[in-house]
Image 1 (tube, rainbow, N blue to C red):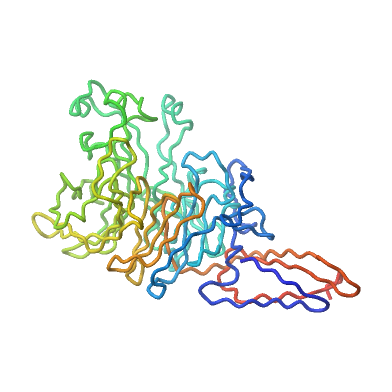
Image 2: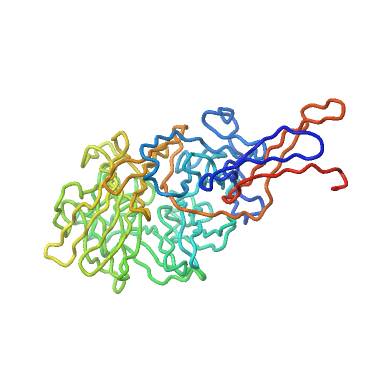
Length: 501
């Protein structure tokens, strides 16, 4: 996105041609300075390792951003879907570093920067950065946990809508454990119905009844994170539907263990008690029901939009489906999404982590995978089969997080989370491209790919400096960038005098 030129005397003409797909404005696409501020506490970026040109981009026009470079391997360029990469890197979920590469970013397929949102959010963590259809066009959405907000931006990267994502208000004893009064689930902000509604996950801390607790062998009232979800009106934040797992999912469905039962139920194995579900995605079927992913029960649930009952469970050992292929099974999964539905079948995607990050976790398969599943729901028993499987480049496991996105041309784009590894696959599963950040430890919760047109309203950033003067000639270096612009093909720079003539 940043360009430089050496020229003289009356007219400096700076023209650099780019193809439409890779546009000239991409390398300094950064957050507009006049964009709506969602700043919490100001954070100064760490400044000790951004001189590494092999790892970070640096810009004369924007020294406040240092996006990370990519290592890219392309195996079939012609088969790739058009579009840009949407990622939001972070170093740790419990943030202690405030790097100038944190937050939402858009990159071209060649790894060049289109837009950096780090300054807009003071280098704070951002999650689930992607596009959603709002008012007939695709616009960016994201989760800003610092303010417990789901945000909808427009095509000039300004905030168009703010949706309150606050969870339940905590009692004093639990606030002391967690450190704040309200809770926000950072896993999903899913804008639906052309931007009129959004579904999101919630955190619910409640004691189980003595009878529920006794069923798992605990004498007392077990403290648990039940969690749930809600559907809200985007314009008003009015809750249109709300669901709590308590009363629908039993303690014994959980397969997660962190310490003894007594430690978990007494709240000594983590703030809030036993993390029985760890809900991590919510979507909606065309028939109005909800698709809910629970990592700690290894289960996808279909939840009725009429009465909140569980319509079915998709789980490898105790669910309601017969598996026609073992590759359709998953464990410790993330990011379940509805692709399509008719009277007999549903197509869904799910990221199969295959194992969790605990020491006692037993792998389901040899590596993590992205899955496109075909569910037949008009038979008894219902059946689950693999429509497509997308393997992790190099094998191995993504123990936490991850995403699967089906693209318009039938390809799949998979985010493997750790070190922001991502890959694009053909419908038959072939790996077409893989890319990974050059900085280890820069993870992204999910990764997406979309076609996108960015139209920032602020002017480009320009930096010029005279580097040599001999007699009547002046040599000038000019750097130009325009954060987020995707339609720039050439730059023309004109010399003027102090009178602007």
